Length: 96
Length: 199
Length: 99
Image 1 (cartoon, each protein chain N blue to C red):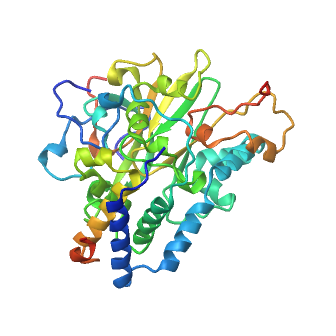
Image 2 (image 1 turned 180 degrees about the vertical axis):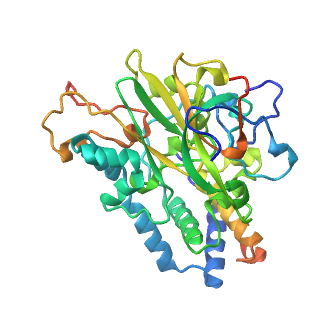
C-alpha cells in the first residue's frame, strides 16, 4: 500500500480507451484531477484484467475525496465526492 | 418506467437458455431457484440494519467497521458478495450513492436496484448537480450540511446510515425500521416522521 | 473535465452533458419484469459456476455501440453481453443464438 489516509494525490490523466479494447473503472470525469486519500480500502483483483478473464493481480484500492464543485465548475461550495480508485491510477502530488 | 424488452431480445433469451440447457450448463430448476433467492433480498433488510444501529451502539460500531459482518448478523448470507461499506450521515454530512459507470448497488441488503438508479440521467447528474437531483425527490438539505456524493466504481457496495429523525424517542426497532425506505438508504431522501397527515 | 480530453466511452456517464436536463423519475418499483429476472438469474448462475465474472459482463455491456446502448433496456444489454461472452468462451455455439 503506497498511500496513507490524507495523502494528496492526482488521478492519472490517461485515456486507455484510445489504445483499444479495455475495461476501466476510473471515471473519465476524474482523469487528471486532484484529490486526497480518505482511506485505503484493501486490495482487490484488477478489474482491467478480470474483464478479459486474464490472471488478475491484486491492486490496492483507495477511497479518494474530491471537491465536488471542482469537477464540472458547478455545484455547492463545500460539497465533496468520494470514489474508489485503484493505486495504479494515482500519483502523488509533488506540489501539495 | 423501464420499457418492456423488444421481441428480438425475448427471442434471443429463449435461444440462449435453450443453448445453455443443451450444453448442460443450467437447468430450469436452477434458474427458478436463483430468481427466488434474488427475490428474497429487499430494502427491508437494510432498514432493519439501520434501525438496529440507531438503538444498539455496539451494532452501529460493527455496521460502520464491517458492513458485511453486520449483514451476516441479520441473517444475510454474504458469501461471494462484494464487501458492504456503510456511510455514516451526521449533523453536518449527508451521503448520496451513485454508480456512474454501471449500476453497482448493495443488492444483498437492498434487493434489485430501481430503474432510476440505473438510468442515464441519474448516473450523469448525481456527480454534476447532486443537489438538483435531490430536489427531484423534494429533498432539501439543511443549511451548512455538506453533501458527499459516493461514486461506486469498484469492489465495495455502499449503503447510507441516515440520521435517526427527531421525534422517535422510545420507538422500538420495528417502528424505526418502518421509517427507513430504499431511497433513504441510497441517500436521495431523509427518513422522516409523518407528523402531518394528509388533509 | 478538461476541454481537450477525448470523449468518454458511452457507459462512462458521470457528468454527461447529454443528460443534464433529463429528469430522474423518482418513483419506481425495483423488481424487474420476468425477462429481467431471468437474465439477472442467468448472470448470477454463470458467475457462480465460474464461467464469467461481473467484470466480463461489464466489458460486454461497454462494447455495445452507443445508439444501441441507449435504445436497449438494462437487461437487454446484459443479455447481449452474457450471450456474447458465452459464445466467445465456447460455452455455447454461435449458431445456437442465430434466428
